[in-house]
Image 1 (spheres, rainbow, N blue to C red):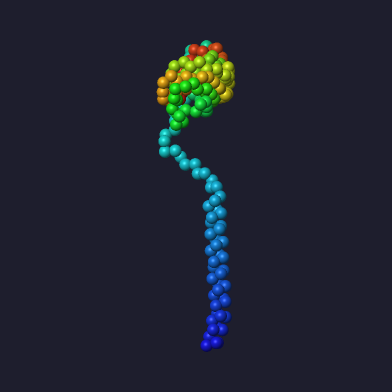
Image 2: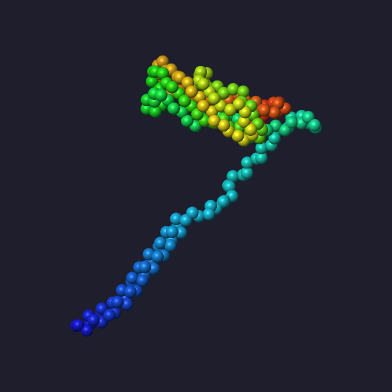
Length: 190
């Protein structure tokens, strides 16, 4: 029996070596696969299943040497990105009776192909004028945006209320020859 055990041990060593080598190989292959899976893959750009959007054509007013090619793009607008209220509204949005200090901030965006002049920036609450101090740009080039802020006091007589605050933009084309274009062919984001 002693010889059998000795042979078993001698035969077990090569088998054990094979098993260990197999385990090391499996772990190495698994690590390589995991590391390749973690690498960012090149994005595949697939064709859209939707038909292409129609090209936005410019409006031409007049003809010959008096022709005016009107700007294109999105209607200039104010985009509010933050609002703070002191004191904070109950439940995050319920304005209980009291006086609130309101600060609004965002950007005036001119996503058109021509420069504009800002004629006025006015504030409103629930579609009604609201007397707040507004500061913002007076002119913007094509494709530009600039910061706008509004600060004021809002009084709630009875509540709770959930008022909607806003800043309205009144603008005109900076190039006076474009004034006849108005906002024709501009995309409205409303």
